[in-house]
Length: 516
Image (tube, rainbow, N blue to C red; front, side, top):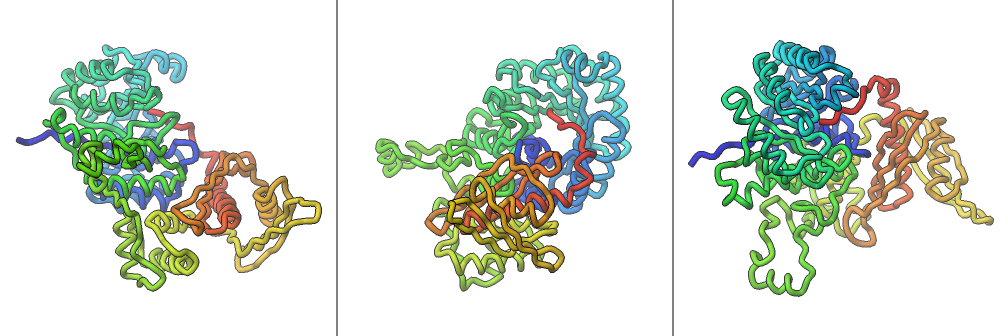
């Protein structure tokens, strides 16, 4: 029996990046897009082209690289946005413009300050203009969850007539319960049957994003918008891995449906996203959490020893998880073996990038007894953050003064010249960052600092993530990796500064965040 394919629309690179602290540079986005294609997602929403030159550049480069997935750019129902989206995805093999406008009474009155007929006119114009760039146009009724069903039908009629082939019904604030989403989707899917596909985009404010998405599928939705690890604004979005595995594991209920997802790529994709963004899934996160396959209870352990199916409805290997998580490579391993391992971990690098990563790997192998897959992921993704290397940490020395005042001396290289300076601070980290400020002349304000062990053991790599604001601009994320936590912290701070300098003069061009 032929099953209906539920299209998986991944918005990790757009909505997921709006998670506080989840900013990614262009090279990181390209790597994620390549892995999403390997995962088998149908549509990759690569970003919001009109947001900034950086977003436009990332979408354009992703469009040239991805071949099997549709590449999509978001656009407000504004000519300039639609044009930017169309130009950014121009070279994609399969391309889509996703345009939207709010349709709920509260949004139309207070945010848009527009009458319903004005909203319809704006929506139609956006879809018609988008069709001059692409054949595949998706239209979203922002805040559909709180919109009048009669108005949803009216605006859907208009945009379908204008050329939209997908109508998305976002529960923008995560307000609706499953039976409410189901009723809305059923009525709308029956109303648009044969004319457009109904899609849903469920936020997780009440923890119902996945449940609402599954209920929508049962009631006629044939596309679901989601993110890896449930990333997204506020409480996040419906998690791709949970939706897909629910469809697979409960095939008795969802017997008529399937997806194009290669589930063995779920865990590698999750780890890649977590490593790049610095946002780890909670330990008890379904499917990909650290404890998702851990069994501590004596009763559970006894059952698992007798038959794994007593307490395990998903096998680790089903999502591509190697429970041993060990790397067979060592200090004597060659480039070929290293390159093969990178491919298995989801990285697609050119020869120069592989050589740089291999050099870092050999240095690490000399210092660390055991190397895990997560060590390699962290090492490679840390290299991606160095796209613009204005400043480079050469050395760091911490000093204990007789009065016990924390102090640090830092040597930094810029344009081949090395500069040394020192500073005291309220703590060791503060002293290090102030020394960097003195050398570079940029005063950073630390908004967040996180350090975590990448793997296991006393010689585990420290992965430091900082969030720093320079000159009052929006905070920039920086990552640092080293066995020495203080050195990793210095590298993270310098990484944030380098990223800021690469974006300087562009941040103010970024419009407001877009929430669907």
